[in-house]
Length: 187
Image (cartoon, rainbow, N blue to C red):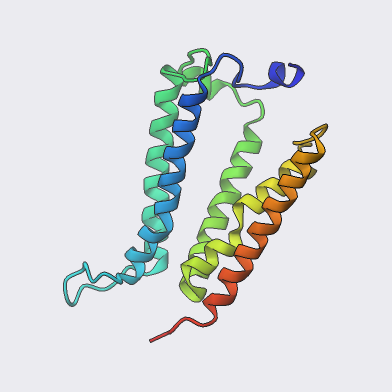
C-alpha cells in the first residue's frame, strides 16, 4: 500500500483486463515495428515499382521520428482531457505550467531518440533482427528495475528463481539470434 500512495497512476481499483488489453495492443504494435522498418528500407516483398529506390535508413528514421511525435503529442493531449486508470483530468495549460520532474522525461526522450537512431544505423549494417536482439529491452529493463528501482525486493524465492530463468532464457535467445545473423547472405 505504501508504494501505491507514491504512484502517479493508481493500480488498486483499476481494470486488470483493460490493462492487459492495452499492454497486448502495445506489444502487437511494437512487434510490427521492426518488420515494417525492414520492409521500408529493404523491400523484400518487392512492393515498390521498378526504379523506385528503397528508403535509406536516415530517411526511414526521419519518417519514424515525425510519426512518433505526431502520435505522442496527440495521445498526450487526448489523455490530458480523457484520462485512464483513475487519473484526474488536466488541461494543456496545466501541463505546460508543471515542470516538476520534466527534465527526466526530456532526458528519457533524448536517450530514446539517440538509441533509435543508432539502432536504425546498426540495423542497416548488421541486419534489423540482430540490432533488435542487441537492444535486449526486456533484459536491460529488468536489470534496471531490480538494481536501480528495487523491484522484486522482498519477493519469494520462487519469484527470484523464475526471474533468473527468464533472464537466462532471454540471454540464450539473444545469443542464438546474434550468432545466426553472421550466417546471413549478403547477396
